[in-house]
Image (tube, rainbow, N blue to C red; front, side, top):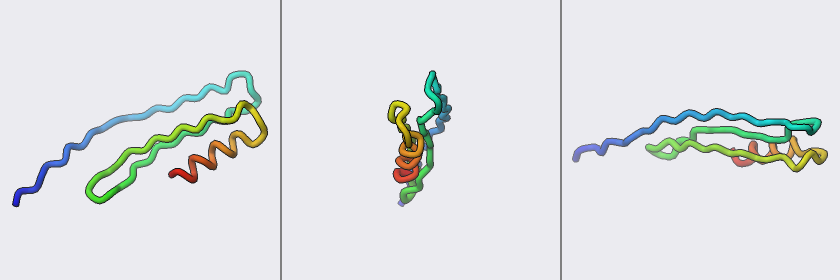
Amino acid sequence: MPKKAIKRSSWYSITASLQGTRAENQDAVATRTILAGHRSLEVLIVCDGIGGLAGGAACANRVVDLVL
């Protein structure tokens, strides 16, 4: 039985985040390649901070860590 060809795609991601006028940048972003059987899945997650409130950066980074 012949094997089916798997089409693979290539893509690139670039991240940028602007701090603006706040004391810290609370945004968090990450990409990961996850292997699932014979497939590889590209996952991109973006977490926005919480408007400059205390702990916003830690919260956004924790969500990224939990998801990936």
